Length: 503
Image (cartoon, rainbow, N blue to C red):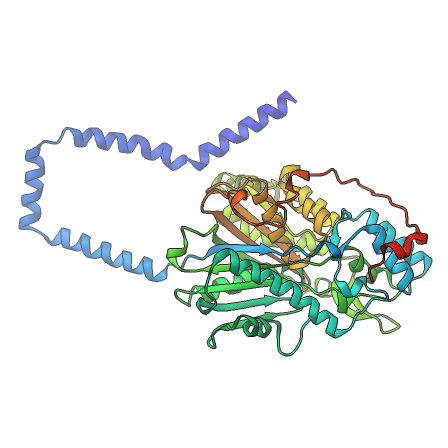
């Protein structure tokens, strides 16, 4: 224990020494220059003035060069992008569904075998989900309604609910919104989801709008990246982002176990986000976007096929997850952080990584590879709550603490896998806990079909006071965190079916 403590202290000393190396060098030089200047007299200053007066060319050259460099920097520097505010949608309590209720539904109205039902129960018990997640009305009906019309109603309910709350929080005028990006992986319609928002809120006719589909649970970060690129070439405007998923139309009713898994873990949810490139919005915005990094492994067949919509032998449509998904996710994460690391890690970590890589690959020394400590780059982590196994793997690979994983694990427990919007529920959790302080850096990272891993990095512009903001966690945040058992067993009593099924 003492050895580990001393080792951690030595790592901190090394980190601070390298991080503030320039200050250690510059401070003595500045002191020496200050001492020298203190010996100069008024006569020395007068002589310098006379020299410049009779020979102004050096001063003119210096001034011109300063102006030119300033203009070049200003022209090449991308516009800052601010996160003004966001909302994470909280469905009605009437849609809350326990694990037992879920099993009652699929037992009574599904076409599953006893073996398949037992498999679903085991998945639920090991999923990390609690008993207060939400299902849409159509899925809870007796019998369930998986029609296109009900799916469309579900999309509108979540989209409009999130956007209504966001507009109320920010007070932004809809005529000032110049960019709109909506992402929903498993549902699309004509007119599009983005067109529905334009119609409901009477957005202006020259709005630049996009609807992204089929891009999986990482589409929320993709929307941020797309909006960032548009904001950097569109002056003085706002971008509205909406991330949702629709469950009803894609509810699998077949017999394949690898296709029934999404039924067990995906739940209802959505988020709306307002970005701005107006410098006047900096003061009221919560965060500034520092960078986005996108990784796409679709060129590899195994990665491309590990998550896909398909029909089974009996033509039942569902989402198929192959056994390769965890290996693919790990490899894609590795590629993403390899790109992100040099952009965010302190030089001390980069030197350690380079040194061990050279020792292992060139000198063939048998030493452990250095795992970069991303806790030195970020104070908060919002890791897509795709499932307990995914979170366990990320925690292990990045050597994160339980405190860092808490927002993701509690989001999975309270809301389930809510696809691309999960990263916003996780950020809302940290805010509700009063953890976000000015200058804190936040890493949002999400995985999705294709296969993709995408990252967004934010910096808090001020302390976030949870009392001043509406948040889906606020009325229950004191109940968290909770201890989530490795296996949460429960009993299904079919005799009380009528009591639990929603009419």
